[in-house]
Image: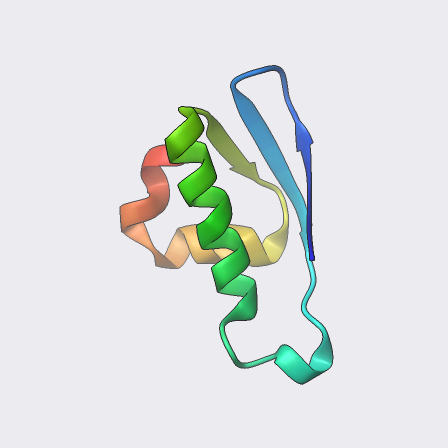
Length: 68
């Protein structure tokens, strides 16, 4: 599950990412973040990753920072 809030019309804030215990360690959380990145690119909007998990994905993955 990922929750987000729009910040105007051209960016959204990822404020929480949560994965059920049975899916931990299977990259489900990263897939959620990457889906948000794909959406941002398609809609030409940016992401503000306030969620610590989402922020860690952006910190570790340089090629997605174009949507920050």
